[in-house]
Image (cartoon, rainbow, N blue to C red; front, top):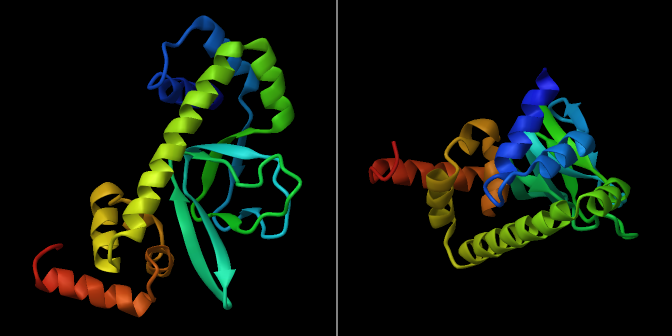
Length: 199
């Protein structure tokens, strides 16, 4: 029963990009492979190879790397987001980690499964390309926003666009994502509260 509910979640996500046909529903049912991970589990380590990508049904995954002995958060991924490591299906080691910061349930794909599904269901391959283009565009917009804004502006933008993330990630993780020290984030918060820009 739980699997059927999760398959429905995937179908609802795909319906944002295309008309759902019986063929597409069959493809989802046939290719769905669900995995559950506990909070703190590492899905990918720096220096390791990646042969899996993930669609998050429940939970939160953080990507990060180490610089000068300190963590730097790259991104947080939550429900209905796709996590495709940069070295996915490539013979190159990862430059970062993927960690579940909550108990997480994902649909897992791998190159062999994708190839087989694309062969049997051509619509799925076309749809995957469309979704990939949307994801790339969003990442470019996020990167541009990040590079052209101050830490305070980044924090306000995060509050506006992903408010629930503040309860799901630690202040330390949020700070490393914004590119500041935790104590600097505390000062930013105090200043914004004092100026009544946040409560």
